[in-house]
Figure 1 (cartoon, rainbow, N blue to C red):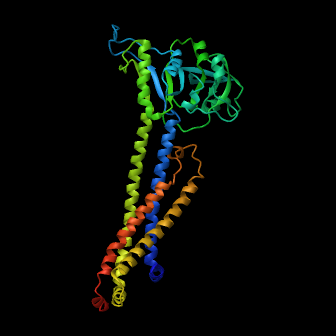
Figure 2 (cartoon, rainbow, N blue to C red):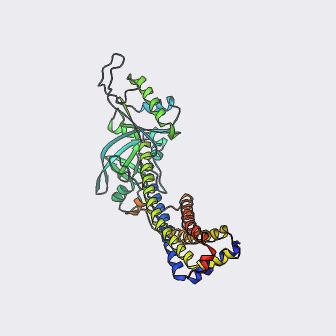
Figure 3 (cartoon, rainbow, N blue to C red):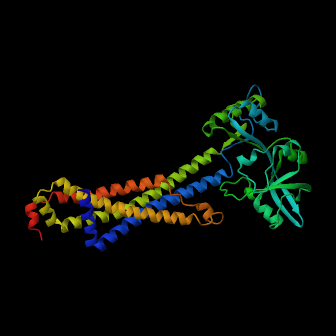
Length: 413
């Protein structure tokens, strides 16, 4: 029975080449619309999310504030200023902390040769590299534990400011002046997409050991503490523990959020995921309706086929063909047509996505659009839609064909 259905299907395709070709083109185009829209939407969402994580890699930003409540006889309005020692205190008291680093920050001037530039200078520890995704280019390194321990004058540069200073020359090992103090360049940050800023992009930033920063500038209090936990799902619990630790040390109500502020960058991550999901849903709906239009074309073709083959259907039924056979014949043809066009659409989409993967996305608009991602989920969704369209496009014409009266059909012209 299956072999006979396939033979009849290809015979019909051959007899109506123009009609079949246009229908296949419509299904192929509709499939490409769904797949490519979802692939580009997925690529954009991934690029946008990675750009945010390249600025804040799922960290908590802890900073001192001002008490907003009276506590143990102490008035509200007291300033809370964090210190370097608070980092070690948090690591010892909060079990879920994986990484932590103090952060000093100020504007500074960089000199090299005749070039003078203004930069955002940060004093930080070695954990800063991962938490801020400031990875060095080959041949260099980030600030390490020895730099901090021995207050070394080591300096890590963003790639843009390094390019402006050294004009293409290798800067590793060179001496630059930072606010008239000599520093040795130990590393240059590799290029990255950054969609979230903190007083400017990291590409124009300078990082030195926090101990060296304190020694040179004489700061008593740090600007912020960056904390990364072992489990992103436990961020809320960790925030509560941080306020309890500092509430005990600085004597304020742990429920007083104004005393010590904690910004959870996971909130931005979750917001971006929701935006990405919304974009994908919108693009999926647009592609789905495009494919539905092609499905309507398949249904119309099947109705024409039923009309043209009314006499043939009547003869088959007169010699004993059952209604189930007639139904399966037309449903099979509609499904086969949908899946054949869908397969062509998937193959063409895969080719386009593969070609897009060869395009440089490190600069310009493409770094924000990202490379399209053709996932298994997108392909399964498309195949499911194609199957449903094939069924709906074939069932109703098939029911009409199965309802043909053999006697009346033999009179049909």
